[in-house]
Image (tube, rainbow, N blue to C red):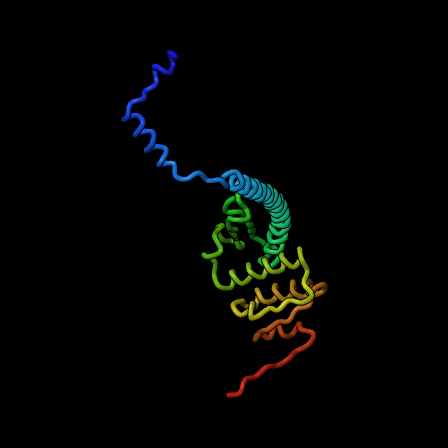
Amino acid sequence: EHQLDELDLSEERQRTLREKIGALGNVNLNAIEEYEEIITRHDFMKEQMDDLKAGKSELLDIINTLYDAMTEQFKANFIKLQENFTRIFSILFEGGRAYLEFTDPTGVLEGGIELVAQPPGKRLRHISLLSGGEKSMVAIALLFSFLEINPSPFCVIDEVDAALDDHNIYRYITYLKKVAEHNQFITITHRRTTLEVCDNLYGVSMSK
């Protein structure tokens, strides 16, 4: 009885309660079924999301593993290329020194590669500062360096000797004959000295 006496039974209180009840709208008799459907759909979507997250994590692990393996393989082959290039450069130039280096040793796959060369009697310099003939010889040394790592069934060389003087051509064809023992070359050239060492000659002319 004491609790009933404390209740607010005023008309204003009743009117407020009626407004709140009215604002609730009609009773949804299907609420329980709809709730179960939503829960079922939510659980399904959550399961799909969990699978996607797990798949993403696995893919990232695979990518990181591949990246590490590619980096190590690239570094190993780069060391071989460096050794070959330094050795072949000295042979073709009859001295001097040259080397390759990573521009970013911490990110070898994203960074670049710097080539520095020092022909005999000259200061160490970037390849862009070399003469046309020297650049050609450096490119030839690099080509032969790649072929030693990964020989090819045949290799097409197009006018690589165009900028070489007679002495450089002699050094070039001498090494070319050595490499040709294990690689087949198709050489496009106008230089007589290079033509003389070819096993077969094919002339190509153009109509005027």
